Amino acid sequence: MAEPTDTQLPSEFYSSLESDRSQYEDRAKLIAKLTLPYVIREDSDTGTTAMTDSTSQSYGGRLINTLKAKMGMALLPPSTSSFRYVPKPEELQALTQGSPENIAKVYQALSSNISIVNAEIELQQVRSTLFDLIIQLLVVGSVIVEKKKDGRKGVMIHPLQSFVVDLDSQGYPVQMCFVEKLKRLPKDVTPKEIADEYDLYTMATLDTESDKWIVTQEIQGELVGKEQSYKNYDDLPFRYLGWTWMTGDQYHRPYAEDYYQDLNQLDKLAKLLTDGAIVSAKMLLFVNERGGRTRKDAVADSANGDVIDGVADDVTT
Image (cartoon, rainbow, N blue to C red; front, side, top):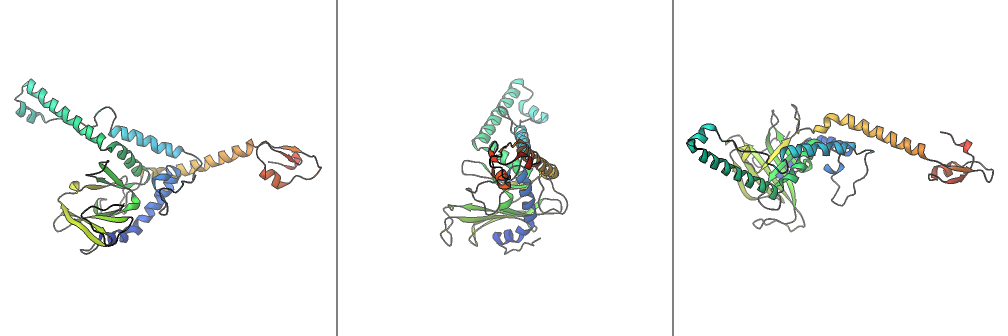
């Protein structure tokens, strides 16, 4: 595992930990092929790359989508609030002096505040991002979530292929870095070279001396913007999330990894059943019009229901 230095650029830290991430990427790709192939793709894939049929069943994908729906509805239920405010009895008593009228006003104010928060959740499209986040945890296992101050979405996710993280002995991050591809730079940032697309590296490091989180950003090998510090991990605008972690793991593992063999065997059985059904359903009509032999290529290249020259007794199953 790479040791961070005071002069290490975010891109250098990112490159130093990419090799530790590769085995978790490969495992996630195997799981994605049996469930939802679009969740994690090859590095060479783009938005126009066609997704190939890699499985003989869609049962794994249905399982993931069912779990996603149930978990998402439990966290953000429709037509109701996912949380409520419950004031402490002693503080409520001190505030209202036990007056029923004042107590009713307090609860009315709390109810109004809940409605405002829920409206903001819908405005920032947190619900759709939450479903994407759940899929990442179920199939891939690790993800970084970022709170955005601008744009149409209030929350953005960074998948495994776009970040690296250094975890401590208990599975908590002490340093992490993610990269974003930008077509337009902020107004206060001037790049060294004009390009159609820029890689923006954002790194957060826990400074052991000050016990604060230091956030720096880099574009084209140069630090940009101001260095920012945060007293607590919870104050950071982004957060690393994972599903299952065991001692020695560099990243968290996904929920579906526990059932990978079941998914793999199910896919093989589905292929056997499909291939067997296709073979058994094929019907050919033979006419020995010329009195010749039955040609193998004619049988192999024929479609279901074709009439070909030959003798039916020459073909066995």
